[in-house]
Image (cartoon, rainbow, N blue to C red):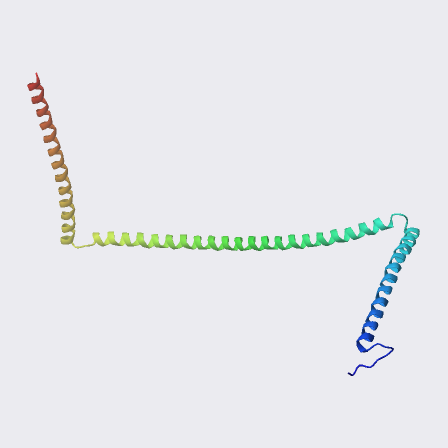
Length: 182
């Protein structure tokens, strides 16, 4: 055993006594601190009441509240400023998009107009080409048109003929039915 005896107390015992003494010292200092804090608050109250008047603590509290409100207000203003900047950016983006769309629409109208002009020119060229065909080809072309017209007329006449026959047949059948019913 390497522990030495000191006043009938070994190393562990001395360590506990020292820790207990430090704890007691700390607790005494804490009590002194709390008492000093109370004395300080009373002294402060007396001093400020005599220098600033009876409502000095309300003014101090109001000042603290104002600072808190000011901080909240600054936060709200910053938040609103960010929101406003987002809206402005969005508006600028929409304006840019609208301008781009308008330019695209104008470009498409121009392309359509050019295409229509090209088609009209091609139609005129085809028409003039038909007129400049040789007489033989022209005769063939006009004969084909006449033949198509005659075929259409023949078809219409056939429809009229069969319709008339059907009507006459129905009338005849109706007369016969009336005659035999009487």
